[in-house]
Structures are given as structure tokens and as C-alpha cells.
Amino acid sequence: MIMAMAGSAVGLGNIWRFPYMVGEHGGAAFIIIYIICCLLVSLPVFFAEATIGKATRKDTFGAMEAIAPDGRFKNVGYIAIVSSFIILSFYSVVGGWSFDYLLRSCAGGFSGKSITEAREVFAGMGSSVLENVGCMLVFLGLTAGIVAGGVEKGIGLFSKISMPVLLVMMIVIASVSLTLPGSKEGVAYLVRPDFSKLNGAAIAAALGQSFFSLSLGVGTILTYSSYMHEDEGIIAAGSWTAFFDTCFALIAGFAIMPAVFAAGIEPSAGPSLVFETLPVIFSRMGVVLPVVFFLAILIAALSSSISLLEVVVAWLVEQKHTTRPRAALLVFVFAAVLGTACALVPKVFNTCDFISSNVLMMAGALIFSMIVGWIMPRETVLQHIRSRFIYGLIRYAAPVMIVAIAVTNLL
Ligand code: PFF
Image (cartoon, rainbow, N blue to C red; front, side):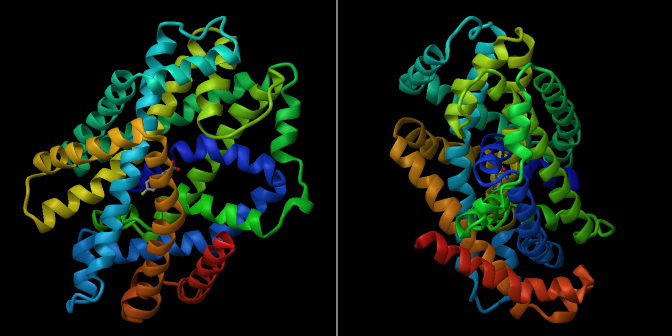
């Protein structure tokens, strides 16, 4: 399950948000803060969520009932299931764009294009209902297909194969990118430490990004942990996932920013970076590089979306006694409806993104750490995490920091 957890963590967030965030918030100074946030807050939340999953061996809803049979935390289970469903819906839209751009790159669709032309292509795709919704459905279909294949033979196998491949692809792109004339500025953008940029907003950004990147607070880690083998340890799983996720984000940064600077373009984040700037820059280096890049994005997005769909499928299978393929199909149909709304109405997309990342994930992370720190028997928790220091972080540091960040964000 460790590979599957790493797969859930490595996703679009590593590619389109992390590199820009690093550059904008002080380079190496931000990386240090990001790592501190991971170690002191995000990893303890990961351990907490995983402890709930491994100790109860149930889906998110069942786990909450097992911890409080009087039904006190029933709604927490529902909130997590709804959160992962919402993220899945808008994430599938972007996954669909990656699929679309993979096809376009295979057909050499970006060679000779300027950024302005690429912008027009992106806008054109956004306004074509058939293309936009069709690609989203293909992506969602692939996600549901893998999950329907089962925990070991679907999710486990896909993660075992895709993670090493993904890493190699990113290393190849980074090696090409780093040898371009003018790429040094991009490296400096990422690593030059600027401690003057480290303010409350930078810390909030680091923590928010590490939560999103480690897939915390919506039940994915909980659900995957419920499938862990007895000899797979929670501390090892969390540490490897965070290590792999951070390394991947840094490699993505070295694949992207040097190329952006070598082309003399202003760095940015989000869709404009991935779907407007990079296809043009990479296609200047031949037809293969854009294909590798969009295939990498598609794989990264899929390895995350399967973890989101699994949260809902696990609930349907365990609580509603549906068969796995039928559950996957059912989630596919409902996510297709919300996904279509996200694909066609930017406001719906942005609202889903905002609510899930800023409200639901934070609330989920807070509640999971409070449940493990204050509700579950201390001996049970220590059996899994075996460290009083980490227990202290889960009990005090994580909740305090989450509330502080939520307040900072609201202000
Ligand atoms: N960790 C994924 C990324 O960095 O893109 C996004 C994600 C996946 C968030 C799964 C939440 C989740 F449950």
C-alpha cells in the first residue's frame, strides 16, 4: 500500500503548484519551511489518519462508527466521503485536459506555435463541450476501471508500475531542461534563499500545499491504511510517502522552471503554466518531450484520482454491500455529473476547489488528529505509532497549527 499512498500524494499539486510556490515565497527558504511544516504538522496528521484506518480496518464511515458506536462521529465520515467526491469531480476535469493534450502532443499539435496561439488552443478546448466533457469522461472512466480491478490487482498494481515510470519520466525532462542555455536563472529562482519573503502567508501556503500534496483530511490515507499488511508500519509508510512526494515535487520544479526561464517567459502556476506555457516550450525541443510530459501528468493525476474514488467505493462496498465494479460504476456516474458542471462552469470548478482545499481538507485533518489525540485509547494509538513525541505532535501541535492557519487564511 505504500506505493499506492505515494501515488495518491504525487499529483497535479506537485507539478503545477509547488514549483511556482517555491519561487514566489523565497526559494530554498520556502523549501525549509515546507519541510518543517511536513515534519511537525502534516506528517503527524498523516500518522493520525493512518492509525484510524489501520486500527479499525474499515472504510471512512465504518471507522468513525467503530471509534464511537453511539454515532457521534457519523457526520465526519460523511464529510470525508463528500470531500473526496468533490475533489474527484474537479480533478477529473484537469485529468481530462491532460489526456486531451497527450493526444494533441502525439499529433505534434504544438510545434511551431507561439504562447498566444497555445492560449487560444486552451480557450478553444475549454469552450468545446464535446472535447472538454468527453476527455473528462475518459479520465474518469480510466479511474473507475482501475478501482473496479480491486485493491491489489487494480490500485496496487497500477501504483507499483506507474510510480517508478513517472519518476524516470520526470528525471528525463529535468535533465533536458537543465541543459538548456539560460536555464540557470530557473534554478536560481527555485533555490536562491530569500528569508525576507517568509511571512505568515508563506507558512500558511506551505502548510496548505503539504496537506493537499499528502492527500490529507478526506479519508484517502485512512482508506488505504485499512488495507495495509500487518507488517507495514505507519511511520515507515508516512515517511516514505512524504519523502517521495517532496523529492518528486522538487524534480518537477527542476523540470519546469529552468525550461520556463530558458525560454524567457514569466513563471506562473496552474492551468496557464501546464497547458499554455509548457507545451510550447517543450515542443521547441522535439515531438517526444511534450508527449512524455503530458503522459507523466496523466499518470500522476490518475494515481491520485484512484485514491479519491476508492474512498467512496470502499464506503459503498463495506456499508451498502454493493459489488466493487458496481460501486465504481455508480461513483463514475455521479462524478460525471458534477465533473460536467465543473468542466462547463468555471465558477463551479473554482468553488469546488476552494471549498475542498481550504475548508473540508483542513476540517478533516483537524478532526482526524483530535480523534486520535483525544478520543482513541492512548495504548491503541501508541501500538501503531510507537512514539510519545509523535503522539504529542498529533495531540497538540497539529490541531493548534491547523486552527492558526485556518484563522490566517480567513483574515
Ligand atoms: N495529492 C494530490 C496532488 O498533489 O495533486 C491531490 C489529492 C489527492 C488531494 C487525493 C487529496 C486527495 F485525497
